[in-house]
Length: 200
Image (cartoon, rainbow, N blue to C red; front, side):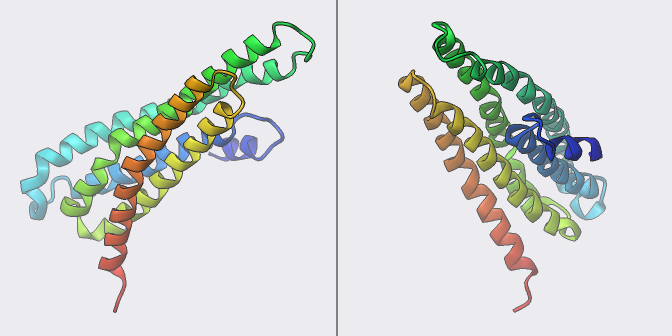
């Protein structure tokens, strides 16, 4: 973690916002896993045990996927950084840059898709997770919200520069659709947790 933060804070372009969004997403999912682990095996919640075990399997795979996307985001940025360095009078520059922009969009969209796939876990843990860790469900909700919004910005910065406006609009629409599905879940869960915890 120290190495990642040190590199993130340096003048190196990678890791950047995309890698940070993947890491933040992984942290959010890890909090969901923690709540599930704290609930698992407890007599008070034994009626939910099978669902909790499913959550644990799902979150484990999700964490691995999101963490792998940190490195993948850096990999797809490298060709883009090189493309920007091509002289503007080079006839191949536009084509090479366009291809690199398309590739640079793929990972933040993949981050968003993964968070969308895991977002339903928040609702489940809010209702069936141990009340001792309900605050962690709320933290997970706000963290996952940040991750999906951060990843979206990394889509938009690439689509803005594309010559292929149809591809750009489709990528933006995909990002916006995911946002419209994920944010209401995160906001609802966060609000419910806050309501449960705040003293009147």
